[in-house]
Image (cartoon, rainbow, N blue to C red; front, side, top):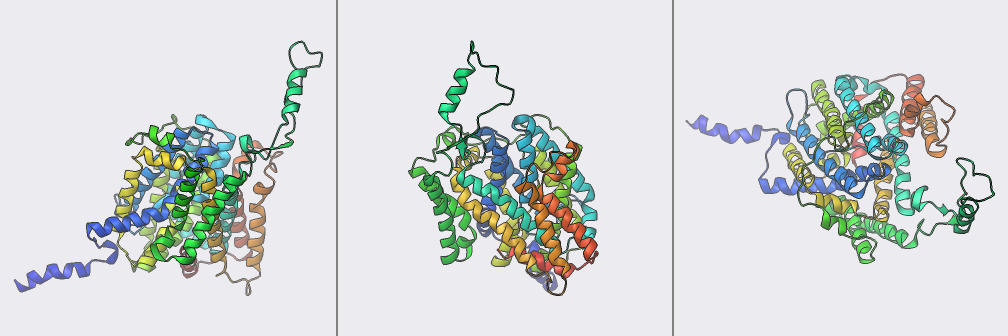
Amino acid sequence: MQAASSAPSRAPQDTHPVDQRLPSGKLAALGLQHVLVMYAGAVAVPLIVGRALNLSPDEVAMLISADLFCCGIVTLIQTLGATQWFGIKLPVMMGVTFASVAPMVAIANANPGAAGAQLLFGTIIGAGMVSILIAPMISRMLRFFPPVVTGTIITVIGITLMRVGINWIFGNPFGPTAPAIVDPAYAQWLADVTSPGSAIPPVPQGFAIMPSVPNPRYADLSGLGIAALVLASILLMVKYTRGFIANISVLLGIVIGAIVASATGIMTFEKIGQADWFDIVLPFHFGMPKFDPMMILSMSLIMVVVMIESTGMFLALGEMTGREIKQENLARGLRTDGLGTLLGGIFNTFPYTSFSQNVGLVAVTGVKSRYVCVAGGLILLVLGLLPKMAALVESLPTVVLGGAGIVMFGMVTATGIRILSGVDFKGNRHNSMIVAVSIGVGMVPLIAPHFKQWMPQSLHTLIESGILLASLTAVLLNLFLNGAKHDKRAIITAALQAEEH
Protein backbone atom coordinates (compact mmCIF):
# COMPACT_ATOMS: atom_id res chain seq x y z
CA MET A 1 0.00 0.00 0.00
CA GLN A 2 2.83 2.33 0.86
CA ALA A 3 4.46 1.77 -2.52
CA ALA A 4 1.17 2.31 -4.29
CA SER A 5 0.45 5.54 -2.45
CA SER A 6 3.91 6.93 -3.19
CA ALA A 7 3.61 6.36 -6.93
CA PRO A 8 1.23 9.26 -7.59
CA SER A 9 3.46 11.65 -5.68
CA ARG A 10 6.37 10.76 -7.95
CA ALA A 11 4.37 11.14 -11.16
CA PRO A 12 4.47 14.96 -11.34
CA GLN A 13 8.24 14.84 -10.83
CA ASP A 14 8.54 12.41 -13.76
CA THR A 15 6.58 14.74 -16.05
CA HIS A 16 8.81 16.63 -18.47
CA PRO A 17 8.62 20.43 -17.98
CA VAL A 18 7.21 20.75 -21.52
CA ASP A 19 4.24 18.52 -20.56
CA GLN A 20 3.50 20.07 -17.16
CA ARG A 21 -0.04 21.39 -16.69
CA LEU A 22 0.01 24.63 -14.70
CA PRO A 23 -2.92 26.04 -12.66
CA SER A 24 -5.64 27.54 -14.85
CA GLY A 25 -5.11 31.11 -13.64
CA LYS A 26 -1.38 31.00 -14.31
CA LEU A 27 -1.95 29.37 -17.70
CA ALA A 28 -4.37 32.12 -18.73
CA ALA A 29 -2.04 34.92 -17.60
CA LEU A 30 1.02 33.44 -19.31
CA GLY A 31 -0.99 32.60 -22.44
CA LEU A 32 -2.22 36.21 -22.65
CA GLN A 33 1.38 37.37 -22.30
CA HIS A 34 2.34 35.28 -25.34
CA VAL A 35 -0.61 36.72 -27.30
CA LEU A 36 0.29 40.31 -26.46
CA VAL A 37 3.93 39.78 -27.45
CA MET A 38 2.95 38.52 -30.92
CA TYR A 39 -0.22 40.56 -31.53
CA ALA A 40 1.30 43.56 -33.33
CA GLY A 41 3.24 41.32 -35.71
CA ALA A 42 0.27 39.01 -36.25
CA VAL A 43 -2.13 41.73 -37.41
CA ALA A 44 0.44 43.61 -39.53
CA VAL A 45 0.37 41.16 -42.46
CA PRO A 46 -3.42 41.20 -43.13
CA LEU A 47 -3.29 45.00 -42.96
CA ILE A 48 -0.48 45.13 -45.53
CA VAL A 49 -1.92 42.56 -47.94
CA GLY A 50 -5.57 43.65 -47.54
CA ARG A 51 -4.72 47.22 -48.47
CA ALA A 52 -2.50 46.06 -51.35
CA LEU A 53 -5.54 44.18 -52.68
CA ASN A 54 -7.60 47.41 -52.44
CA LEU A 55 -10.17 45.65 -50.28
CA SER A 56 -12.85 47.54 -48.38
CA PRO A 57 -12.30 48.28 -44.66
CA ASP A 58 -14.84 45.57 -43.76
CA GLU A 59 -12.97 43.00 -45.84
CA VAL A 60 -9.61 43.99 -44.32
CA ALA A 61 -11.18 43.59 -40.86
CA MET A 62 -12.38 40.13 -41.95
CA LEU A 63 -8.79 39.24 -42.94
CA ILE A 64 -7.62 40.26 -39.46
CA SER A 65 -10.29 38.08 -37.80
CA ALA A 66 -9.42 35.15 -40.07
CA ASP A 67 -5.72 35.61 -39.30
CA LEU A 68 -6.23 35.55 -35.52
CA PHE A 69 -8.63 32.60 -35.81
CA CYS A 70 -6.15 30.55 -37.84
CA CYS A 71 -3.26 31.61 -35.57
CA GLY A 72 -5.23 29.98 -32.74
CA ILE A 73 -6.09 26.81 -34.65
CA VAL A 74 -2.54 26.22 -35.94
CA THR A 75 -1.02 26.99 -32.52
CA LEU A 76 -3.29 24.36 -30.95
CA ILE A 77 -2.30 21.80 -33.61
CA GLN A 78 1.40 22.56 -33.14
CA THR A 79 1.34 22.38 -29.34
CA LEU A 80 -1.19 19.57 -28.74
CA GLY A 81 -0.49 17.49 -31.85
CA ALA A 82 -3.00 16.04 -34.33
CA THR A 83 -2.52 12.40 -35.32
CA GLN A 84 1.04 11.14 -35.70
CA TRP A 85 1.66 13.52 -38.61
CA PHE A 86 1.21 17.02 -37.18
CA GLY A 87 2.40 18.97 -34.15
CA ILE A 88 5.85 19.15 -32.57
CA LYS A 89 4.31 19.43 -29.06
CA LEU A 90 6.58 22.23 -27.87
CA PRO A 91 5.70 25.70 -26.51
CA VAL A 92 5.29 27.35 -29.92
CA MET A 93 3.03 30.22 -31.01
CA MET A 94 2.19 30.23 -34.70
CA GLY A 95 1.70 33.39 -36.74
CA VAL A 96 1.86 34.70 -40.31
CA THR A 97 5.41 34.84 -41.62
CA PHE A 98 6.82 38.15 -42.86
CA ALA A 99 8.88 36.25 -45.46
CA SER A 100 5.77 35.77 -47.60
CA VAL A 101 4.69 39.44 -47.54
CA ALA A 102 6.67 40.67 -50.55
CA PRO A 103 5.46 37.99 -53.02
CA MET A 104 1.89 38.34 -51.71
CA VAL A 105 1.97 42.12 -52.17
CA ALA A 106 3.35 41.62 -55.70
CA ILE A 107 0.41 39.32 -56.52
CA ALA A 108 -2.03 41.78 -54.91
CA ASN A 109 -0.68 44.81 -56.78
CA ALA A 110 -0.90 42.99 -60.12
CA ASN A 111 -4.36 41.55 -59.39
CA PRO A 112 -6.34 43.83 -57.04
CA GLY A 113 -9.82 43.11 -55.70
CA ALA A 114 -11.70 39.85 -55.19
CA ALA A 115 -10.17 38.24 -58.29
CA GLY A 116 -6.69 38.91 -56.90
CA ALA A 117 -7.72 37.47 -53.53
CA GLN A 118 -8.88 34.26 -55.24
CA LEU A 119 -5.54 33.97 -57.00
CA LEU A 120 -3.58 34.80 -53.83
CA PHE A 121 -5.39 32.28 -51.64
CA GLY A 122 -5.15 29.63 -54.37
CA THR A 123 -1.40 30.21 -54.40
CA ILE A 124 -1.25 29.86 -50.60
CA ILE A 125 -3.31 26.64 -50.65
CA GLY A 126 -1.02 25.18 -53.32
CA ALA A 127 2.11 26.16 -51.39
CA GLY A 128 0.64 24.64 -48.21
CA MET A 129 0.04 21.31 -49.94
CA VAL A 130 3.57 21.30 -51.37
CA SER A 131 4.99 22.16 -47.93
CA ILE A 132 3.19 19.24 -46.27
CA LEU A 133 4.62 16.86 -48.89
CA ILE A 134 8.22 18.10 -48.71
CA ALA A 135 8.38 18.65 -44.92
CA PRO A 136 10.26 15.39 -44.20
CA MET A 137 12.94 16.37 -46.71
CA ILE A 138 13.50 19.87 -45.32
CA SER A 139 15.46 18.80 -42.25
CA ARG A 140 17.85 16.97 -44.59
CA MET A 141 18.42 20.24 -46.49
CA LEU A 142 19.88 22.10 -43.50
CA ARG A 143 23.38 21.83 -44.93
CA PHE A 144 22.30 24.18 -47.72
CA PHE A 145 21.17 26.83 -45.22
CA PRO A 146 24.05 27.65 -42.85
CA PRO A 147 23.94 30.94 -40.86
CA VAL A 148 25.60 32.90 -43.68
CA VAL A 149 22.61 32.02 -45.88
CA THR A 150 19.79 32.36 -43.33
CA GLY A 151 21.24 35.59 -41.90
CA THR A 152 21.44 37.12 -45.37
CA ILE A 153 17.87 36.07 -46.24
CA ILE A 154 16.40 37.46 -43.00
CA THR A 155 18.32 40.72 -43.50
CA VAL A 156 16.83 41.12 -46.99
CA ILE A 157 13.34 40.31 -45.65
CA GLY A 158 13.68 43.15 -43.14
CA ILE A 159 15.05 45.64 -45.66
CA THR A 160 12.27 44.78 -48.13
CA LEU A 161 9.57 45.21 -45.48
CA MET A 162 11.00 48.53 -44.33
CA ARG A 163 9.50 50.11 -47.45
CA VAL A 164 6.06 49.18 -46.13
CA GLY A 165 6.67 50.90 -42.78
CA ILE A 166 8.01 54.03 -44.44
CA ASN A 167 5.05 54.23 -46.84
CA TRP A 168 2.71 53.83 -43.85
CA ILE A 169 4.19 57.02 -42.41
CA PHE A 170 4.47 59.23 -45.49
CA GLY A 171 1.93 57.74 -47.90
CA ASN A 172 2.05 55.32 -50.83
CA PRO A 173 3.99 56.57 -53.86
CA PHE A 174 0.92 55.92 -56.05
CA GLY A 175 -2.74 56.79 -55.68
CA PRO A 176 -4.36 59.42 -53.44
CA THR A 177 -1.26 59.86 -51.27
CA ALA A 178 1.31 60.10 -54.10
CA PRO A 179 3.96 62.81 -53.52
CA ALA A 180 2.71 64.87 -56.49
CA ILE A 181 -0.66 65.38 -58.15
CA VAL A 182 -1.78 66.83 -61.47
CA ASP A 183 -2.08 70.62 -61.49
CA PRO A 184 -5.84 71.37 -61.43
CA ALA A 185 -5.35 74.12 -64.03
CA TYR A 186 -3.72 71.66 -66.42
CA ALA A 187 -6.46 69.09 -65.83
CA GLN A 188 -9.13 71.73 -66.56
CA TRP A 189 -7.34 72.82 -69.75
CA LEU A 190 -7.20 69.21 -70.98
CA ALA A 191 -10.89 68.75 -70.20
CA ASP A 192 -11.77 71.92 -72.11
CA VAL A 193 -9.77 71.17 -75.25
CA THR A 194 -11.03 67.58 -75.44
CA SER A 195 -14.70 68.42 -74.84
CA PRO A 196 -17.23 67.50 -77.57
CA GLY A 197 -17.04 69.85 -80.55
CA SER A 198 -13.38 70.74 -79.92
CA ALA A 199 -11.19 71.24 -83.01
CA ILE A 200 -8.26 69.52 -81.25
CA PRO A 201 -7.59 65.95 -82.50
CA PRO A 202 -8.53 63.14 -80.10
CA VAL A 203 -6.03 62.60 -77.30
CA PRO A 204 -3.91 59.47 -77.92
CA GLN A 205 -4.77 56.45 -75.79
CA GLY A 206 -2.69 56.41 -72.61
CA PHE A 207 -1.97 60.15 -72.75
CA ALA A 208 -1.87 61.75 -69.29
CA ILE A 209 -0.57 64.92 -67.69
CA MET A 210 2.46 64.41 -65.48
CA PRO A 211 1.86 65.17 -61.77
CA SER A 212 3.73 68.36 -60.88
CA VAL A 213 2.03 69.85 -57.80
CA PRO A 214 3.04 68.70 -54.27
CA ASN A 215 0.29 66.61 -52.72
CA PRO A 216 -0.81 67.97 -49.30
CA ARG A 217 -1.80 64.43 -48.28
CA TYR A 218 1.75 63.13 -48.70
CA ALA A 219 4.12 63.39 -45.69
CA ASP A 220 1.55 65.35 -43.68
CA LEU A 221 3.36 66.80 -40.66
CA SER A 222 0.61 65.92 -38.17
CA GLY A 223 0.78 62.28 -39.25
CA LEU A 224 4.56 62.37 -39.15
CA GLY A 225 4.36 63.70 -35.59
CA ILE A 226 2.12 60.81 -34.49
CA ALA A 227 4.46 58.26 -36.10
CA ALA A 228 7.41 59.90 -34.31
CA LEU A 229 5.48 59.76 -31.01
CA VAL A 230 4.81 56.03 -31.45
CA LEU A 231 8.48 55.39 -32.22
CA ALA A 232 9.65 57.53 -29.29
CA SER A 233 7.22 55.77 -26.92
CA ILE A 234 8.56 52.37 -27.94
CA LEU A 235 12.17 53.49 -27.49
CA LEU A 236 11.45 54.96 -24.04
CA MET A 237 9.78 51.73 -22.89
CA VAL A 238 12.69 49.67 -24.21
CA LYS A 239 15.10 51.95 -22.33
CA TYR A 240 13.32 52.33 -18.99
CA THR A 241 11.21 49.18 -18.55
CA ARG A 242 12.02 45.52 -18.15
CA GLY A 243 10.31 42.17 -18.55
CA PHE A 244 6.73 42.01 -19.75
CA ILE A 245 6.31 45.75 -20.47
CA ALA A 246 9.48 45.81 -22.56
CA ASN A 247 8.31 42.71 -24.46
CA ILE A 248 5.03 44.38 -25.49
CA SER A 249 6.53 47.85 -26.08
CA VAL A 250 5.51 47.81 -29.78
CA LEU A 251 1.89 47.01 -28.91
CA LEU A 252 1.82 49.70 -26.19
CA GLY A 253 3.36 52.22 -28.61
CA ILE A 254 0.51 51.52 -31.05
CA VAL A 255 -2.02 52.03 -28.23
CA ILE A 256 -0.45 55.40 -27.33
CA GLY A 257 -0.48 56.44 -31.00
CA ALA A 258 -4.14 55.39 -31.34
CA ILE A 259 -5.13 57.48 -28.30
CA VAL A 260 -3.41 60.57 -29.69
CA ALA A 261 -4.83 59.95 -33.19
CA SER A 262 -8.32 59.70 -31.66
CA ALA A 263 -7.84 62.91 -29.70
CA THR A 264 -6.80 64.77 -32.86
CA GLY A 265 -9.68 63.38 -34.93
CA ILE A 266 -7.47 61.32 -37.26
CA MET A 267 -8.86 58.04 -35.93
CA THR A 268 -12.62 57.51 -35.72
CA PHE A 269 -14.73 54.64 -34.37
CA GLU A 270 -17.70 54.41 -36.74
CA LYS A 271 -16.52 51.10 -38.22
CA ILE A 272 -16.13 49.62 -34.74
CA GLY A 273 -19.67 50.61 -33.80
CA GLN A 274 -21.04 49.02 -36.98
CA ALA A 275 -19.13 45.75 -36.54
CA ASP A 276 -20.79 42.71 -34.96
CA TRP A 277 -19.80 41.48 -31.52
CA PHE A 278 -19.49 37.88 -32.70
CA ASP A 279 -19.14 36.23 -36.09
CA ILE A 280 -17.90 32.94 -37.51
CA VAL A 281 -14.89 32.87 -39.85
CA LEU A 282 -16.01 31.08 -43.01
CA PRO A 283 -13.82 29.57 -45.76
CA PHE A 284 -13.52 30.96 -49.29
CA HIS A 285 -15.01 34.37 -48.48
CA PHE A 286 -13.91 35.74 -51.88
CA GLY A 287 -15.07 32.73 -53.88
CA MET A 288 -13.32 29.58 -55.02
CA PRO A 289 -9.54 29.97 -55.27
CA LYS A 290 -7.66 30.14 -58.55
CA PHE A 291 -4.37 28.32 -59.06
CA ASP A 292 -1.34 29.51 -61.02
CA PRO A 293 1.53 26.95 -61.16
CA MET A 294 4.33 29.56 -61.35
CA MET A 295 2.91 31.52 -58.41
CA ILE A 296 2.58 28.32 -56.39
CA LEU A 297 6.20 27.44 -57.23
CA SER A 298 7.35 30.90 -56.13
CA MET A 299 5.42 30.70 -52.83
CA SER A 300 6.64 27.13 -52.25
CA LEU A 301 10.25 28.30 -52.53
CA ILE A 302 9.47 30.97 -49.93
CA MET A 303 7.97 28.23 -47.72
CA VAL A 304 11.21 26.24 -47.98
CA VAL A 305 13.03 29.25 -46.50
CA VAL A 306 10.33 29.60 -43.83
CA MET A 307 10.59 25.93 -42.84
CA ILE A 308 14.38 26.08 -42.67
CA GLU A 309 14.01 29.01 -40.26
CA SER A 310 11.41 27.01 -38.28
CA THR A 311 13.80 24.05 -38.10
CA GLY A 312 16.45 26.21 -36.44
CA MET A 313 13.87 27.51 -33.97
CA PHE A 314 12.62 24.01 -33.14
CA LEU A 315 16.16 22.78 -32.52
CA ALA A 316 16.91 25.80 -30.34
CA LEU A 317 13.64 25.33 -28.44
CA GLY A 318 14.53 21.69 -27.86
CA GLU A 319 17.80 22.78 -26.24
CA MET A 320 16.02 25.46 -24.23
CA THR A 321 13.42 23.05 -22.84
CA GLY A 322 15.66 20.01 -22.52
CA ARG A 323 13.61 17.90 -24.94
CA GLU A 324 15.40 15.95 -27.65
CA ILE A 325 14.20 16.84 -31.14
CA LYS A 326 14.39 13.85 -33.46
CA GLN A 327 13.93 13.70 -37.21
CA GLU A 328 10.28 12.64 -36.89
CA ASN A 329 9.60 15.50 -34.45
CA LEU A 330 10.98 18.01 -36.94
CA ALA A 331 8.88 16.50 -39.72
CA ARG A 332 5.71 16.87 -37.61
CA GLY A 333 6.52 20.48 -36.78
CA LEU A 334 7.29 21.38 -40.38
CA ARG A 335 4.20 19.60 -41.69
CA THR A 336 2.22 21.83 -39.35
CA ASP A 337 3.77 24.89 -41.02
CA GLY A 338 2.42 23.48 -44.28
CA LEU A 339 -0.95 22.56 -42.78
CA GLY A 340 -1.27 26.05 -41.28
CA THR A 341 -0.56 27.54 -44.69
CA LEU A 342 -3.15 25.26 -46.32
CA LEU A 343 -5.74 26.22 -43.69
CA GLY A 344 -4.73 29.86 -44.12
CA GLY A 345 -5.57 29.77 -47.83
CA ILE A 346 -8.89 28.08 -47.13
CA PHE A 347 -9.88 30.57 -44.40
CA ASN A 348 -8.75 33.71 -46.28
CA THR A 349 -5.43 34.23 -44.57
CA PHE A 350 -1.72 33.60 -45.10
CA PRO A 351 1.33 31.29 -44.65
CA TYR A 352 2.21 30.37 -41.04
CA THR A 353 5.39 29.77 -39.07
CA SER A 354 6.55 29.78 -35.44
CA PHE A 355 7.04 33.29 -34.03
CA SER A 356 10.60 33.87 -32.83
CA GLN A 357 9.48 36.50 -30.27
CA ASN A 358 7.50 33.85 -28.44
CA VAL A 359 10.35 31.35 -28.53
CA GLY A 360 12.50 34.06 -26.96
CA LEU A 361 9.80 34.62 -24.33
CA VAL A 362 10.18 30.98 -23.23
CA ALA A 363 13.82 31.72 -22.43
CA VAL A 364 12.95 34.99 -20.65
CA THR A 365 10.18 33.55 -18.42
CA GLY A 366 11.71 30.12 -17.91
CA VAL A 367 8.22 28.55 -18.30
CA LYS A 368 8.61 25.56 -20.62
CA SER A 369 5.09 24.14 -20.53
CA ARG A 370 3.48 23.83 -23.95
CA TYR A 371 0.08 24.28 -22.31
CA VAL A 372 0.88 27.98 -21.88
CA CYS A 373 0.87 28.25 -25.68
CA VAL A 374 -2.31 26.12 -25.77
CA ALA A 375 -3.92 28.83 -23.62
CA GLY A 376 -2.52 31.48 -25.98
CA GLY A 377 -3.95 29.61 -28.97
CA LEU A 378 -7.39 29.51 -27.37
CA ILE A 379 -7.24 33.27 -26.69
CA LEU A 380 -6.30 33.93 -30.33
CA LEU A 381 -9.12 31.71 -31.55
CA VAL A 382 -11.64 33.66 -29.45
CA LEU A 383 -10.23 37.00 -30.66
CA GLY A 384 -10.76 35.80 -34.22
CA LEU A 385 -14.47 35.46 -33.51
CA LEU A 386 -14.83 39.09 -32.35
CA PRO A 387 -15.25 41.38 -35.39
CA LYS A 388 -15.19 44.51 -33.22
CA MET A 389 -11.57 43.73 -32.28
CA ALA A 390 -10.63 43.35 -35.96
CA ALA A 391 -12.48 46.58 -36.83
CA LEU A 392 -10.51 48.39 -34.12
CA VAL A 393 -7.22 47.24 -35.63
CA GLU A 394 -8.37 48.12 -39.17
CA SER A 395 -9.34 51.62 -37.97
CA LEU A 396 -5.79 52.39 -36.89
CA PRO A 397 -4.33 55.18 -39.08
CA THR A 398 -1.37 54.07 -41.13
CA VAL A 399 0.83 56.70 -39.47
CA VAL A 400 0.34 54.91 -36.13
CA LEU A 401 1.30 51.60 -37.71
CA GLY A 402 4.24 53.24 -39.49
CA GLY A 403 5.92 54.30 -36.25
CA ALA A 404 5.66 50.72 -35.00
CA GLY A 405 6.55 49.31 -38.44
CA ILE A 406 9.96 50.98 -38.34
CA VAL A 407 10.67 48.95 -35.19
CA MET A 408 8.99 45.67 -36.27
CA PHE A 409 10.57 45.49 -39.70
CA GLY A 410 13.85 46.99 -38.50
CA MET A 411 14.06 44.23 -35.89
CA VAL A 412 13.75 41.65 -38.65
CA THR A 413 16.78 43.24 -40.32
CA ALA A 414 18.61 43.38 -36.99
CA THR A 415 17.90 39.68 -36.45
CA GLY A 416 19.55 38.87 -39.77
CA ILE A 417 22.56 41.03 -38.87
CA ARG A 418 22.76 39.34 -35.45
CA ILE A 419 22.89 35.91 -37.13
CA LEU A 420 25.55 37.16 -39.54
CA SER A 421 27.62 38.40 -36.57
CA GLY A 422 28.31 34.75 -35.72
CA VAL A 423 29.57 33.96 -39.23
CA ASP A 424 33.32 33.51 -39.77
CA PHE A 425 34.27 36.40 -42.06
CA LYS A 426 37.96 36.50 -41.08
CA GLY A 427 38.84 32.89 -41.74
CA ASN A 428 36.57 32.49 -44.76
CA ARG A 429 36.60 35.40 -47.21
CA HIS A 430 33.95 33.65 -49.33
CA ASN A 431 31.29 34.46 -46.73
CA SER A 432 31.66 38.19 -47.38
CA MET A 433 31.14 37.61 -51.09
CA ILE A 434 28.00 35.52 -50.45
CA VAL A 435 26.45 38.25 -48.28
CA ALA A 436 27.47 41.12 -50.57
CA VAL A 437 26.22 39.64 -53.84
CA SER A 438 23.04 38.13 -52.36
CA ILE A 439 21.92 41.40 -50.75
CA GLY A 440 22.75 43.26 -53.98
CA VAL A 441 20.66 40.86 -56.08
CA GLY A 442 17.86 41.03 -53.50
CA MET A 443 17.72 44.81 -53.85
CA VAL A 444 17.15 44.74 -57.63
CA PRO A 445 13.30 44.51 -57.49
CA LEU A 446 13.24 47.12 -54.74
CA ILE A 447 15.37 49.70 -56.60
CA ALA A 448 14.55 48.82 -60.22
CA PRO A 449 11.04 47.27 -60.15
CA HIS A 450 10.79 47.29 -63.98
CA PHE A 451 14.00 45.31 -64.52
CA LYS A 452 11.99 42.35 -65.83
CA GLN A 453 10.02 44.19 -68.53
CA TRP A 454 11.83 42.49 -71.45
CA MET A 455 11.93 39.04 -69.84
CA PRO A 456 9.35 36.28 -70.52
CA GLN A 457 6.10 36.92 -68.65
CA SER A 458 6.19 33.39 -67.24
CA LEU A 459 9.33 34.26 -65.24
CA HIS A 460 7.96 37.43 -63.64
CA THR A 461 6.38 35.68 -60.66
CA LEU A 462 9.65 33.94 -59.80
CA ILE A 463 11.93 36.96 -60.10
CA GLU A 464 9.82 39.89 -58.86
CA SER A 465 10.49 39.02 -55.19
CA GLY A 466 13.79 40.31 -53.88
CA ILE A 467 13.57 37.85 -50.99
CA LEU A 468 13.33 34.91 -53.37
CA LEU A 469 16.18 36.21 -55.55
CA ALA A 470 18.39 36.78 -52.49
CA SER A 471 17.53 33.30 -51.15
CA LEU A 472 18.40 31.53 -54.40
CA THR A 473 21.58 33.58 -54.83
CA ALA A 474 22.76 32.92 -51.26
CA VAL A 475 22.09 29.17 -51.47
CA LEU A 476 23.81 28.78 -54.86
CA LEU A 477 26.82 30.95 -53.97
CA ASN A 478 27.31 29.16 -50.66
CA LEU A 479 27.13 25.81 -52.46
CA PHE A 480 29.62 27.02 -55.08
CA LEU A 481 32.08 28.75 -52.73
CA ASN A 482 31.77 26.80 -49.47
CA GLY A 483 30.19 23.48 -50.40
CA ALA A 484 27.40 21.82 -48.40
CA LYS A 485 28.67 21.29 -44.85
CA HIS A 486 26.23 20.18 -42.15
CA ASP A 487 26.77 22.03 -38.85
CA LYS A 488 23.81 21.49 -36.53
CA ARG A 489 25.46 23.45 -33.70
CA ALA A 490 25.87 26.56 -35.89
CA ILE A 491 22.19 26.39 -36.91
CA ILE A 492 21.04 26.17 -33.26
CA THR A 493 23.34 29.05 -32.28
CA ALA A 494 21.96 31.18 -35.11
CA ALA A 495 18.38 30.43 -34.04
CA LEU A 496 19.17 31.38 -30.43
CA GLN A 497 20.72 34.66 -31.63
CA ALA A 498 17.57 35.37 -33.66
CA GLU A 499 15.40 34.93 -30.55
CA GLU A 500 17.37 37.29 -28.31
CA HIS A 501 15.29 40.29 -29.36
